[in-house]
Length: 484
Image 1 (spheres, one colour):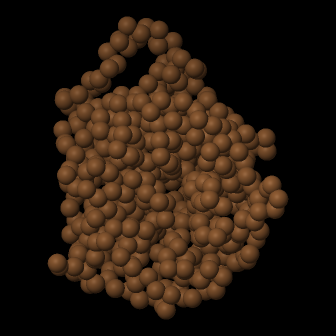
Image 2 (cartoon, helix red, strand yellow):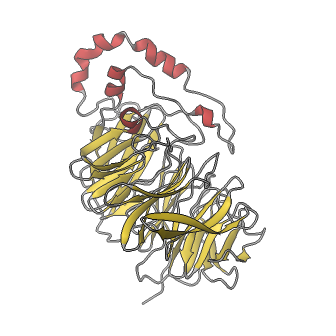
Image 3 (tube, helix red, strand yellow):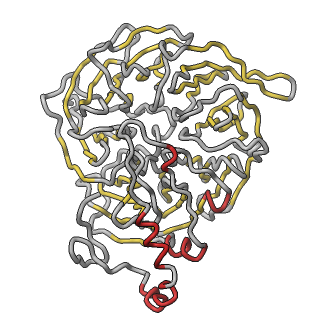
């Protein structure tokens, strides 16, 4: 996050001390003095040494503050900025785009070759993390974290210049564990829904940042915060937000306008939250939500929240991150890291029930994914395998090609548009444009776009504007397009 930003129109020592809406706290200073020792204790335990590439899941802090203090620290503060939304019309409204495929569906044609340097429209500093962005109605939305103030910060920026339109903050201690924030907001014309690292859900008015409703999954439902914090990206489906607390309930639908629960999925087996996100599918003309929980993959009715099927033998013990990929005809592709490999399943109707039938399984040496979710494009699946190489397989699990040892991407993100795949190396910050073909790896362009490391956040692409980041900086690129 930038070292300086405006709060309430004044700055003192780089940060204003005036906070809109909290002047009433002054009379409470005496009452709060009795718990000052708690703050001292929290500060004393806030630092830890962690390995850069191997974060320790034991570093997750459980919120054990007294109830009164927890309420005070999470009230929320709206801070207006000075920027205005852009007239830019492109949209990338949630994780993996509007249809959760990670494919740009517009008709924009990109140039076949790149210059030595891609145009950078703007760049900003961020708190350490891997949170990606959503783009809608000329605005960029991101969940950030300020370690100095110990605040989650939901930020709305102008896509023209990266300047802040508004910021909504709430206090929560998040101990550094290879970054803090790592989710993507979901936004439509009216609302933006976010999930913070400690499982705080907020629904804000997209234009103004005013809070419509919020929930604390840990306090409200008993959610256990995953190792390396929440990675599940909220889903907006019509007039509902779809969330998986992985507790009581396992999954839920919430009315976007009122915040009222539409349905809840019971969870007698104690299936917990993972870093994976929910994806909608259609099967036999009915809509389902598919989610990879700690105890397996589950399909839930979009109408009622009823569990329709489960596959308990698909689990990843350390971190389950990639989202299920709907293939069609009842088929779903699942993959993961830590030697999990990949499987293809098919939903089969048996009387009044649905069974998940396994079609094939691939070893991690053939295909898998530690972090990013692969892309289904033209009856082939493209993704970065555990080797770090970009790979292509067909829908029967046959490996078509890999990018080779000279072209590795680590844990970096990728996205598809205009028959190309744009893939980012996570340590070198090199973005490559590759033709999406099963015939072989064909690179069309490459450019260094970031200087930092751990560039893991999902890419957002709307029109010619591409947003990507490393652990502490975000850039907005203007991709070259074909001349009309």
